Length: 300
Image (cartoon, rainbow, N blue to C red):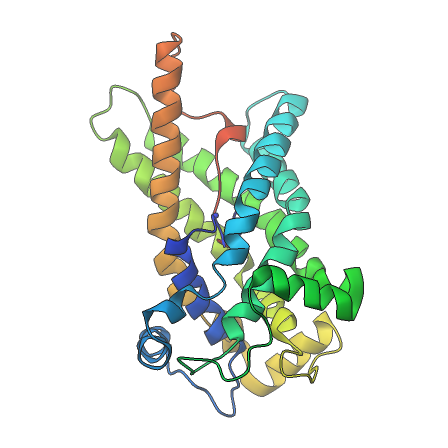
């Protein structure tokens, strides 16, 4: 899951799905606002207008360029260092890229989460804590310092490192097993399936960690902190809501993950294939370092 995330490419098309995901993940079990994904969508549109679906879009837009630059560089250099294009090396290179990009991804997702929780259920927020994503990070920094803007860094690392590895590994294995060849009339559908399923596999592999990350980053928005750390958050969430707490928001995440990653991988692969054919190349699979992940997770 490329930050997340692609959550995890952070684009406006992903922000609505990411908003539903966060709202469902952090809502109170005693007084839940939403019964499910569709009810959450309906409620936000009715109470906050269509623009409410795009809360927090500023943060992903600011971080997208930096995240992709880091990911491309780390992925490419790691693959060159490892030397061989094998499934294990794909996983290791993806994991390395996921780890390094957390430096940007964590503060970006913190601002996104805080902005998305602001004014819940209100078309016009009566009291805005933050004007925008940058103002959000500045205020958090002034109040809590560097540690504050890196809230959730450990959970972000736990999510992104294996998530990116699984993402690249799944795509590599699927394209090999499906037999991606330039002269295959079904090449594009195969690429779409491989990309979409890779995104789903990536999210499924680390989704429970994403729930904890969202809860930690949203904690303290109302001025009162509920969790003292990762294990306390896991313990309290499990005791109050059971194992299902770790699947909150999963439906909206997977609905977003398949089409976004399918389109991304297919587009990147076809563009690189065309570029290589211009240079005399015949391989239809993109260089591992040139692929980009979802969101998801941040994102995806």
